[in-house]
Length: 302
Image 1 (cartoon, one colour):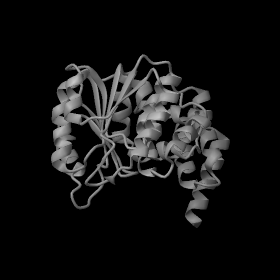
Image 2 (cartoon, one colour; image 1 turned 90 degrees about the vertical axis):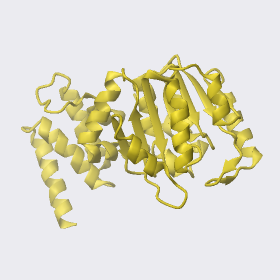
Image 3 (tube, helix red, strand yellow; image 1 turned 45 degrees about the vertical axis):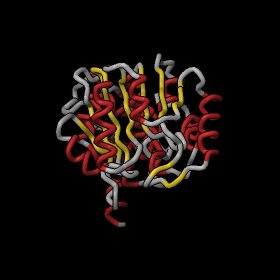
Image 4 (cartoon, helix red, strand yellow; image 1 turned 30 degrees about the vertical axis):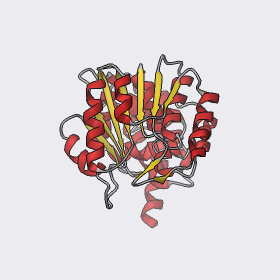
């Protein structure tokens, strides 16, 4: 479902230095797959990491989706001034890789909003000027354009410094809709504004709210290409109190176990979390019990 490792590397290679958004690439990729949106709009593209994640998911899953990246590519109060070659590089990249999927609009957000019909956008990513006033205006201006399936993403929800107001606006708006806020890579707020959110998206956000540590550790591991996609299938298929759920197959438990084994030498904490879940689903498995005890002993001795 995630695609092969070269796909992740291709996304990172666009601008691997911007780790603050690279860390959210797996979620953006999966969210696009789960939603199967007709229209994605990004406000503030910079070097295109997030836009590329959406686009690659659309391409690899053969989705009928149009993506619009909107930015003046001039810089702002927080980013400073952009050299013209950034836009040239980004434009060239998307023309070469996603010519029938992505349209770049070099214009202001307020001007671009008139190009979209009301209730036409399924996924909106707000990542422009980060003052409180600007983020609030972006959200309120574009909210009428959101469809019944609408999801809005806000980047930098954890940043607290002068003139940054995303965190303040997020604290207000996240109480009005179902939401989840990632606690790494400067924060990524996920706001479910539509009245008919795709079922899979609702289930994942509900799971994240109740199991945030495990949820985020897996996504961060995916970013680092340290877990197979099969290990992550646990998050999609697992339901609360689902020990008897038919979706929890022997193959899935094996994938969770093998995911732990694949990272035990370089991230014992995450390996322990995965093996603990495998043990909960297969409490009589002798090998899983043995590895769990081994991990607990090593962590105790640290």
